[in-house]
Length: 247
Image (tube, rainbow, N blue to C red; front, side, top):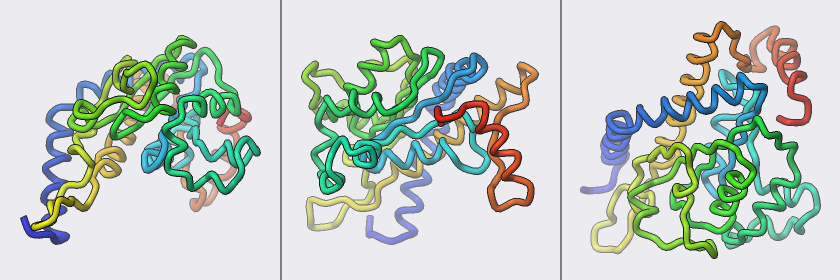
């Protein structure tokens, strides 16, 4: 296939079709689990390193999203002086298991919280250790990963386990090994990653399923209104006040 925007759109459409055809049951299961946490007064804690941080941003702190959703990020290590700012661009830091504990120590995590962890490969030490610690603490865990990728790579965690092996619910983002869709003719290369696209659909699908269950339980869903709509500030601040520094 020659490389073009049209070719990428076609390939991305095929990934989206696979997602819809195969993963809706898992998205519904994940939504049920997360809704139970919200109805219990919990927060949905969302974590991802590298480009998987986009998944956390898609679920937390945006218009039309759930107020009790918190993006956990490794950036907190630099903001709080745990690591020097120069280390922020270190591409290997996410491979270190110990940073999972250092990250969690910066947040107000409570027993009623549920976790979502996203990683295309599901292999890096920090991500796997985060999942392991989440389960040690007794939280429910939804994992978003590429099963095509993670099933073909080894773990970088001392346990030899990968992210999806800790999950209560696994959602396959339907991305290929290496994430990129289009082959570069004559070169051992691929371009145009798709996990951010399918990941965004999964994040919004989970949000929809949580809201559906809250409405079915007779609850008004705690949802952000765009800050660029008149009257939104008062609405959003009132909801944020319920959770304080937890979000």
